[in-house]
Image 1 (tube, rainbow, N blue to C red):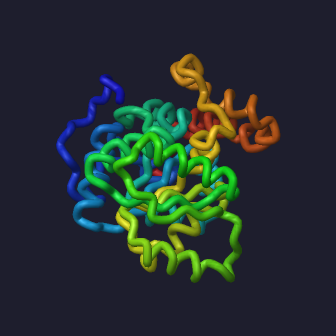
Image 2 (cartoon, rainbow, N blue to C red; image 1 turned 120 degrees about the vertical axis):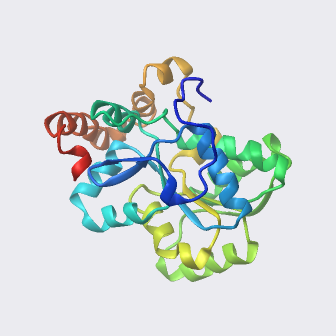
Length: 262
């Protein structure tokens, strides 16, 4: 948790009260890690369904090309600044966020609280091998939590009803979904009212890291804000998506006066 956070530690009680900066129409939370965890702890205790999106520049750019994707992001109850580029953009336009809130770290911080409060967790996504290994890691690291569901992400629309019912029956406090970038957030948004879980969060490749399939970027890379580059070294096939990062930066610099007005 960063000691440089400038956001007050007072718990925000409602989504409407969350301090935000709009980047091309995407409402990004300005809260730091500590306040975000406190806010979500309150959400769980009060059983208020929330979709949490961990936003990066690639997602913001996708929202510019797809009005439906933008609308989906705008309906999410909480969008945290996961990507370094999003944090930079907010500062560049004079609306800085408290700090970066990486999805992987947010998951871990929630698990720390969940261990004390005996929260129930459901993991959905990745391959069977990866999700089982991720589940084993969480069980060993946080024995106080209860994994009430563990399921891979390889299912189609015809199985959605079955998956949703399984989640509802398990009644978790937190649902972590790790599927493709184009799929996980829209899937949560489509079914969040039926699912009704307090915290429903897309976690991208976090299951790969938890399982040991991928390594988290060393602190050196994190401090230099080069986690994306370390990920690219491990998965070079992602280079086409990564090309959107400099495009995003150039777009923000070109549109500086319009970024928050979109």
